[in-house]
Length: 433
Image (cartoon, rainbow, N blue to C red; front, top):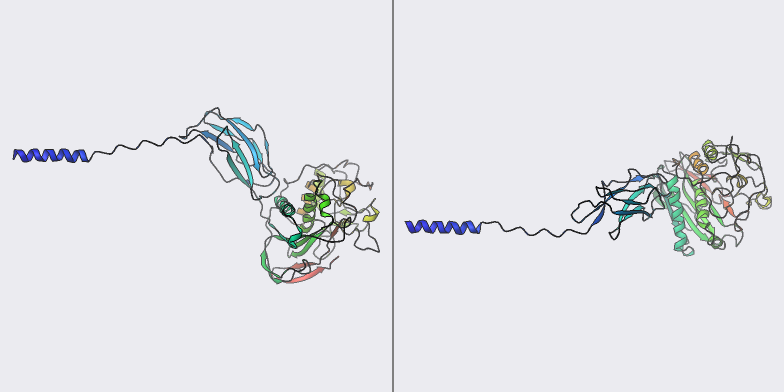
């Protein structure tokens, strides 16, 4: 009995030893120091507006503890935005550094979006993204594709993104059912699709040889109600397109033409779906009569020039821009469909492109609002009317423009214009001009 008790005691000792916990594995070594964003959020805003909330980053050691006194540099990595304030910031006691004010670029997002980059010494950089808010969509389709380089195609994409930064409201979708578009775009199949919001066909092709028409653009179909374009075409002359590649204006010319497809100038006239925005059409002193472009003009210094209306191009001082009875198309692409060159000079939507820059002003954005678009009034470029207080009735000779921008360089409305309603009914509202 005594031996059995000893045996049980010995067995208990063995069992007790067997049940002891295995010592824990040593913790992994801490990782390298890193940059992190504090309270990450989804950031978005309209083009050319300041991002909110402000960006705050932290420098932490490998265990997540804050590192004070670290230098953090903030730069724009993508999106053509800008920073206002001190771009090099030292982390505080919490290891945190607040970025300067970040203003988004003027275009809707491209492939790389809007990106703010934080760097600190040899740490991996931290990219913080934001989205430009816009409900408007432009789809560019290239036809006769062999005539256009990848770099030229990119300029059309950039133009569309710039306009999407200005027009922000979604338009009513339009369903097309085996719709013939040959009057607008030759040799293209009929369309069966729902369009949101605008489709533009673009090409570079022979038009009329060097030194004549560089570009032709306009809408082909507009939605009803509202009469805003759903489909249009832009054509550039192969013989002339390269003349702009060395002076920085090709991007501006493409953006100018795309704004015509959106409706600026091309829908100012008197067709049944047009807006009757021009008083004195065909004279040397036409005047744009809608209100929101005039407000934008006054805001840029045109308190006298635009006291009642906005001066439109009437070809005063440009005889070859005026209508020619032997050539009805001459001047049709310039007069009554642009802001007046003699008054507004380098503004993008005058009838003659100047050497860069050719800014998009608050007046042009107002003109888009006059057409019924929801716009971002912060998306304009810096622009002031030169001597705006003395040009209200001054029909002086215009300033020099690019050699390639000779009178007659542009032709609008060269294709027929159709309207289409919610039921899919299509009707011709203006013949090709």
